[in-house]
Image (tube, rainbow, N blue to C red; front, side, top):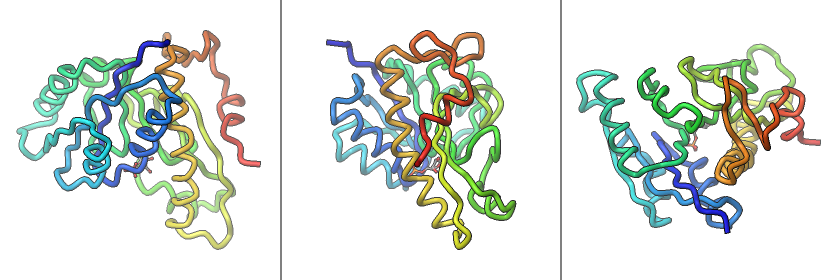
Length: 219
Ligand code: GRF
């Protein structure tokens, strides 16, 4: 049996992606164990999902630290105490500095609600609608120093409907987020996924952009 990889998740809010990963792990699909969930927001609803699943939780409120660097350092210490193989950002709404990002290079993932490299940053659904796009989606990527622009692991596309609101579009995208994040976590925990010289390898082969999206095409 494959040894289970230790996963730490960072959240700030609702935690629906965390819940999807918890379910993916629980179903036995991923040889993983969620060992710790850290929230920077004491009121994050996702903390309850973690507790209900019997996962250790910690609140580390960034407002209690004098600057980003001291927060990042404390966060690194807390995470490292849990000895993770993989750290996942699941709606973690803090920008992490270079020291943190470099420390977890190749074992730090994020999910972002757009077809990166398009629409990094916030309010992606409203911006996609304002631009009149016909498709939108989500991406799981390795985190690098530049926000929302690390090497992409997997994406899923959704159509944009003419009567969409930011909320209806967000809901369609979120459904796909819940599908692809557990897949990326599983690949990593199975030892099939890695980052080498800035390139994502799956089963030893570089991912090409066509393939990335084909994984997530909705017929
Ligand atoms: C998701 O849309 C995710 O892509 C973005 O933040 C949101 C978090 O939602 N990074 P949840 O907390 O996982 O429900």
